[in-house]
Structure formats: C-alpha cells, structure tokens
Amino acid sequence: MKICFLQKRIFPYFGVMALSGCLKKEGYETDIVIDACEKDAVLELKKAKPDLIAFSVLSNEHTWLRQLSSKLKREIPAVPIAVGGVHSILYPEEVLTLSGVDYLCRGEGESSFTELARRIALKKPATDIPGIWFKRDGAPQMRGASPLTGELDSFFEDRGLYYERYPKLGKLALKVFMSSRGCPFHCSFCANPSIMRIFGGKGEYIRRKSARHFVEEIKRVVSDYPAASLFFADDLFAVDAAWLREFGPLYKKEVNLPYICTARIDLLEEEHARLLAGSGCHTVSFGVETGNELLRKGLLNKSISNKRIFEGARIIKRMGIKIQTSNMFCLPDESVEDAQATVDLNIAIGTDYMFTTVLLPFPKTALADYCTEKGLLKKEYSFEDIPNSFIQDSVLSLKDKEALLNIHKVAHLCLRFPRLKPFLMHVAKKIKCRQLFLFLWLFGTFIRFRDERQLNLWRTARYLWEYRKGL
Image 1: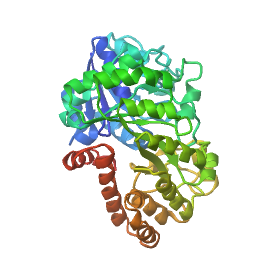
Image 2 (image 1 turned 120 degrees about the vertical axis):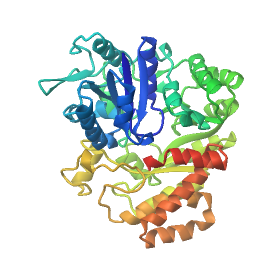
Image 3 (image 1 turned 135 degrees about the horizontal axis):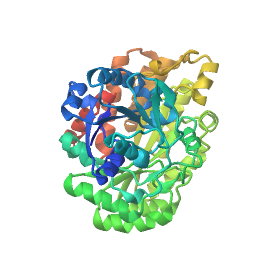
C-alpha cells in the first residue's frame, strides 16, 4: 500500500509529516509531490504509482484543488483521492462535492486516515470511519469529525518524507517544529474558534508533547539535516512555565541551537522570558495585528491593550531577546491613520522584525459576513474570488485601498530605517505603482529574513527563492 501526499506550496506541512509518521509505523509506504516544485505534478504522481492520493489543502487553494483533482481523476481514475487539511475541516461540503474527490478527512487523521488507508489496502468498505466522509451514488455522506489525537508522544513527525524527495528543503538553514496543538482564544481572523466548535466533545483540545519527546524529535532531525536556527511555530509556545522549566535545560544540553518562538504577549511574564533566554531563544514572535486598539479588541476579538503590549515588549527586551510581530493591513474600517499607527506602535515598542499580511476573510465566516454587510465584499463572494497570495492585494473594496496596500509594503522598511519613514509614508499615500511597492516589500522581506533568522546573504536568497511561488 502506497499513499502519495499532494500539496501546492513549498514547505513541510505538520499534518502531512504526522500522518506519514503514523502510516510508516503501520508498514505503509508514503511519498510526497509538491506542485510548486514540479513541472508536471500529474506526471510525477503517475510515476509514483500510488494506491491512494491525499491532498492537503489550505482554504485559498480551493480552485487549485478543484482543477487538479479533476485532472487526476481523468488521468488515473482507478486511484482514489482523499482531501485533508484545514480547508476540509472548515468547508467539508464544498470539498466533497468536487467531482475529483472521493474521500474527505475531517479532522486530525492519525487514527481515521490511517484506518482509511488500511480499508483501501484490504479492499474493504470505508463507510463507518468517524471523520471520513465519502460519496454514495455521487451524494456526500457525512461522518462528523474524527477524534482528536490524544497522545502526541506516540509518533515522530516524518520530515524525511520531504527531505528525501526534495533535498533542497533539507538543506535550508531554518528548521521549523511544533510542540503543541490547539489555542484557547477566539480571534475573529483565525480559523481556531470554528475548529474548536467542530471538535467539541472529541477529546482534549489543547495538547502538548512532553519536553523529552520534543527534544528527541529535534535531535533526530538536526543530526541528519544541518540547521543554523530553529523556529517553534506553536500557536502559543511560551505559555506554560512548568513545561519551559523542563524543556530549557534539556534543549540547552542536547540541541543548543538559537531559536525563534511564539507567544501571546498578554500571557508572557518575566519568568517565561527568563526561561526562554536561558535556553537559547533569540526572538519572540507575537501578534500586534493593528495599532488601533479598538479595531484589535472589537473587530478582531483580540482583547489586548496597547499598554499590555508595551509591558510585554519591555519584559522581552530586558532579557536581551528580540521582537518579531505579526501585523495585518487592509482591515474593514481601517483608515490610513490606523495603518500608520500600526507602524508607529511597532517602532515605539522596539520591534526588530515586522511580519505583515493583507487581511483575507474566508467565505461563510463572521468576518466575511461583516464585510459583506458593510458593502466591502460582493454578496456572492466565494472561494473562486480568493487570491493565491496574502501579500499582493486585498479582496475588500476599501476607500483608501492603494494607500493601505502601499503602507503594508513599506512597513518593515519604515521600522528598519526610521529616518526614511516620513518619505516612505508620503510616497505610499501619493504614488500608485504596485510593481514599485512589491519591489520595496521584497527588499524589506530580504532584510528581515536575513536578520531575523540569522542567515547569511546566500542562505537568505536561497530561502526566499524556494518560497517565491507563494508570494
């Protein structure tokens, strides 16, 4: 039995690595095809000769899924196609009605998807697996959501799946890990509140690997694939002081590589920052989202004050740790002054690296409904309207759209070169030339990546080149 995963973008997906690790434990063979890395993904899948094709899909890839699954069904009709990932959890009906899709995994698939593979291998029906949706006479058959994976220490994520087929990914100096799953908060721009509702009663939502298992997982990777630094990409890495007290000495003794991690700034206390600094953390990443406190609390449902952001930033800086922030532009109700305030807040708290995106509301969410009611989105807004990129444009009909997009593009340059800020802001408000501002964004991103991830010029250029198709 051979399962071949298929995805669009050029980076290892945690869900795919987890599933591959579980499937290999059961004796199945796995492979991966990344569309952005191939001239012809369908041809590569034919060469792989899988018994099951498994798409992993983000919600802004719905059109890609529809087109490629349909082509695969025409080219190799005997091979069943399953779809997983956050898009299938949030929008199962839209996915399963696509003509090229046979199965849908709604949820974490360590148990349910592995069981689907077993049934297909044995040529047995797969109509009673919780969380596995299927078609009967062309009509979707729904099976709720699969149980949450309770024990994250029961398997190791299989990074070799990616690194063996695409060695260039294994050579990247920054390696990304995740120690936990789940987030207890309800920010309106995040899929987490919806996912939390879907998994109600399906098990413990907030889970974490033991410190020993997590360190062992890191050691297994960095011993075979060189790394200059690591990124711990949990929704909330720096939240449990007791876990950090156990993790820090183990990591320092057995790995001892510099790392970036995530935090929620209103939960971060002095002890967290001290433990992070002692174990080798050089940068903490947290969400500012917007400089307008009312927008942050009201529209985005993120109840953190500017005062608390300042306090948390001071704690981080006192420990000699740098700050990376996440910020959004082109929000509904956002003014040019609000966008400037986002940049100003980052400068004031001493942010070292600004990560910026353009807000993209997904169909059938409260945020999309709000935008429709305000006349910022057309009433028939669907997945066909979603752009490939979170960077270049906004789907909203905003009053000062061009200026907001331009401020987004120059935000990090304003932070990095504050003397240029008045000039860059003036240009952003007055000039309409998307190619110019995209170039400025690329330049600012190059500088940010080089400094933030502690890479040399060559490694930075190579890293960005690998991910260029996602821009």
